[in-house]
Image (cartoon, rainbow, N blue to C red):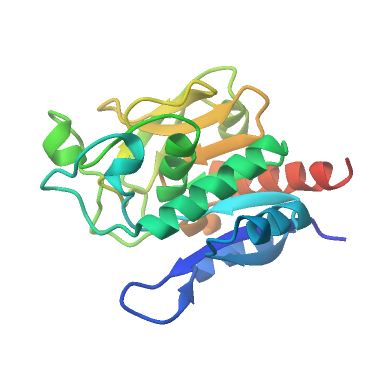
Length: 237
C-alpha cells in the first residue's frame, strides 16, 4: 500500500470549486505517495476522520492568512484571505501534530503551520522588512532566483548535502517569530526564514516551492521523497 497523503484543498476565489495545484499532486505521486484530497469543512468530527485515515498531511501554497488569527490588525500590504480556510487548515495541522503524523507545508503552508503552532508572520515583507530581497519573482516557477543558507545538523542540511541551496520565490508574507516547537533551518540573505522543522523531524516546511523544481532534482526532489518515506513509516505504527 502506498502511504496516504492528505492534501488540503480550498475554495477557489469567487468560484464554486475546490482547487490544488497539479504540481503539488504530481510531486506527491512522483515520490511514491497516494494523494487523498481533503476539502474544507467546519465539521471537526469529519476533519478528525480525515486525519485518522491518512498517514501524513500536506499543506500547499495559497493566499494570505487572516491577521486576527495571529493577533494583529491588517496593514495596507495585506492581501486576500479567507478565514474559514485558515481555521480549517490550522485545525488540520494541530490534529496531525497531536497524532504525530508527518506534516509538510509549502509557502503558505509553512506559514499556516507556524501560526497553528503558536508563531507569527510578516504580513508584507516589502513594507515590514528593510532592505529585503525580491521575494515575489516574475520568472517562471522552474527558475531559481535566490539562495538560502541552511543550518548544519538539520534534516534539510542532509537533504541538500550542504550549507546552501538555490530556490524560487513567490511570497510577500513569511514567518516572523517561529513557533517554540519549530527550529529555523534555512534563511535568505536578508534574514527571511525559508525553512523550519520540528525536533523530531515530523513537521517540515519550506517557504519556496520545491514542487515547481522537481525537474531540478537535488534538495527539491528530496523534500518530497523524505516526506513520503516518513509517511510510510507512520502508516506502519
